[in-house]
Length: 420
Ligand code: HAM
Image (cartoon, rainbow, N blue to C red; front, side, top):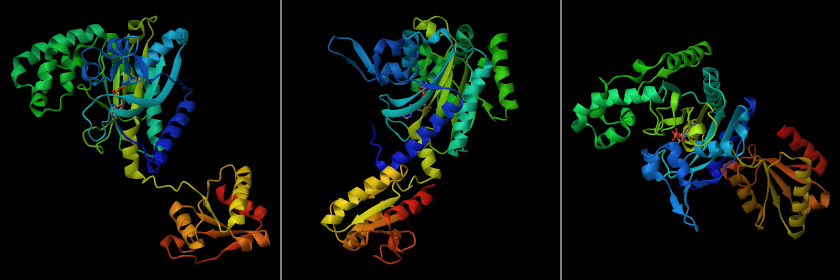
């Protein structure tokens, strides 16, 4: 679990603000659900024999002896809320954001508290909404200036088709059981589809000959998937069909997809999701088709950090004040500037200090301008303005360069022009 320090927060806010704007552009509305749900909800949705439920949940008994868990993902809570509040009598396009918790083995890109931004759409069953959801993610990458992501898609079929495939896969894998990696061997009887996901080279080699789920699809599933592929082609979204793409959560059927990068090492999946048409009913709601995805903010932050250092200065101006009278007047001036210039990010020197030390702080703050208020300026009724990028102060040389003395109104006009 990580602290997110102020230097990095700018990137987080940039991702969150961009996502919010993209969601608004598609008419998606935000939903906020609790961080804690009854454990049973996750067992019934994510699946009893998944890694998440078997070994990664932070579960505890509350004072009444009820088992609760920190949410390991957002879909289950969203479905619960949608059923509970009667949201499902019409299509819903929802999004959410927030921390999720999984007791995983921490490594680069994999944390125990991490943050997702996710989308869940209810009540729409056609491939057009699958396409919309993917277009929305593509627009998000575009707005963030990310190019290094590739789209992989697959279809998991419907429950019956998956069951048949499971049998075919088991028939194929059983004779190779003793050569499978230990995790895959364990999954053989519980969750054999997850073996397709194994990174072990020997298991991968065995899987090269495995039957493909795509071969056993019924006509409806096939048509849905073909329509999605045709739509992606028509709209110019490149993708790769990956028949080994299975997801670590049990609720999926039909379309699944992931956005992947090679730039983050082993944890290269930045965004993942798919259809889950049976989950609402399984959790007690009326049958309602659904599709969604979630992206990992930490992974996006790391990826964006490679493009942009995130070192945008967080202030525009630093107000230097020398002398008791000036200190009070500086606070008064700062309030006036904030009243008049709502976008201005102004840092007032607090704690005194010589002109030189205050200028050093101004320089360190990254501010473009230093505003100067000393006895001389107070006598004249002016404020000094120095452009720190022009004065050579950024090289730590001390006070050189031009100071313009402006009356407060003229200063406001200059700063307003600068901010616009
Ligand atoms: P997921 O694949 O478990 O799906 O997680 C989605 C994304 O969250 C991953 O692709 C990754 O970027 C990020 N993520 C997951 N675990 C971690 C971790 N331990 N540390 C850092 N990032 C992580 C879901 O959670 C589904 N609820 C997605 C969904 C929504 N499907 C339909 N609707």
